[in-house]
Length: 400
View (cartoon, rainbow, N blue to C red):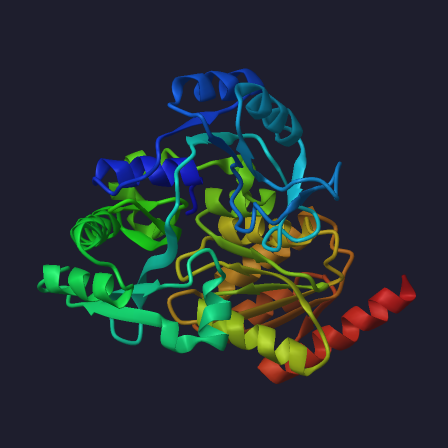
């Protein structure tokens, strides 16, 4: 689950991670009032959307104008910036061309930046540890730094038994070239950031840029997202969820405890398990097709959930064919078959449907589909399924 920058900074501040003073605003009037409450004389007005690259982005109603992060010298400037952002669609490199409507702003105090750095805390699956990554190349995409200057990324893996120790923090501070009082500030910053990450069940915390102001290290920007499986014990974090920032189909999937991912192709995919989803995508591409979405029904789906999943897939107007690829271990093939048949009848299926089932109760599942009276194309294995759905989808598209 993602949250907005201002929410991330509220959480960081509770853990004594230094951030510039800022106030969220939901209207132009609130933005002006926020600026009046800040010390000034410089203010920064930031569009709040779940996407990066806001400052370099553009608004669809003014493509040549300023982006979603603006420096203001007066409250009148703040008002003008708020009017230009609120209710308008901001396009960044992470939103895609459709962009996202700005419904919230964050007005912060301007700071005198001496140096910018990069800092993130992530879960490193290779080492099974929480890992810090820092770089002197602050304000840049870390992917670009990794590609062109990998030696400028310094890592520190934290043993979960001991947790973050001062020597870890000093290593990071010295690697960034910090000296004197800045080292002491950085050690406090890193130690508190680790505590925040662990105690809130975060999956990533990214501070880009982390800045030096005098001898104080601060988080000028902040991105946080969280492990959805741990939100039951993080109610205050779960309450920060902004559904207006989420895809409508993702919201529907969430209601049924399903996982949904939207893509750019025309073949909808129902699978059970992330690994099966990845292999399904690869083999569809191998046979010349492009997935439109993935819906993972997991291992404990009911007929009701499968029916809902099927409807969500079909709600994507780009879907011209569907591949159901299920390996029945915990998930029973007959339950999948019943859900597919029920949903296909309810929505009056009008696109080709290819189903590959394997595992628990597979024969019973195939029997249910065979007796349904629906034009379901059965597949023997994954390759057969991919070949059939790509072919059927192309034929249906040509006929249309």
